[in-house]
Image (cartoon, rainbow, N blue to C red; front, side, top):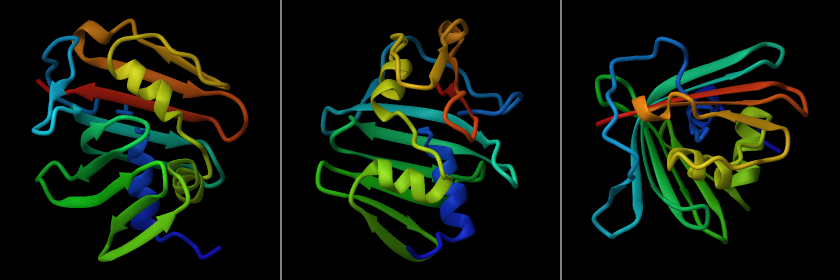
Length: 171
């Protein structure tokens, strides 16, 4: 398998789906409802940060705009100044990562996150967490205590490497 470039790795760390590092920002939360997108799909925006405690550690944070569901969706990751870092698109047939002028295709979103981070992100559970609904995913723990203020945290404890995911949702 070809190596994934650093920018692609960094972009995928944001997926996580999907996490915002401590102190990531001044985003404000708009309530418990996802914003509807133009086509009626659910939509979330905010800041996301991911820390993968591998050797060496990998960390990333960015703005995100996530639309869709676990079957079909897209996510754009950008800098605080609005520069697009990466775009991710997925369907039941494939997942694509566009970053640094190149597009890589994977058989699934799971494969995309594994290649980029060395860790699978639980998209089904993440989408529930973004709605404020507790959901389980093997090896993951979510903390929704600050959900009313637009924050959510999740950790993957097993299998290694440990992954910390933090999100602050925008208003």
